[in-house]
Length: 79
Image 1: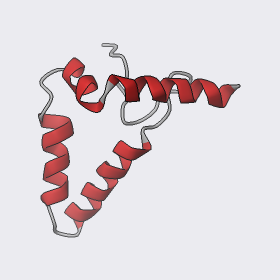
Image 2: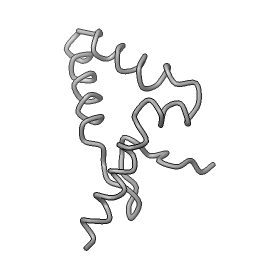
Image 3: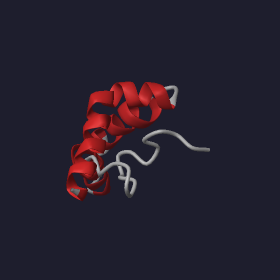
Image 4: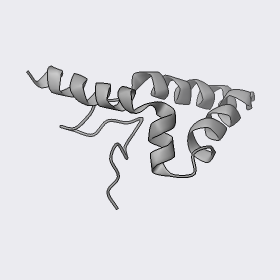
């Protein structure tokens, strides 16, 4: 099944780049979880994974302007 920005926060070659800010939140949460502090990880999961009921809600929550910016920056890198 295809979903626009479905690889987010990862990038999709020739379509959009990584969302480094959202990846930073993921990594910080994962590191904290592995260190025994589950708060950052559970907050991340609640906000980005369990929170949005649909892919559309996820895109709206992250911000479509942010998603479009990732696409435009990817195109700028190719120029």
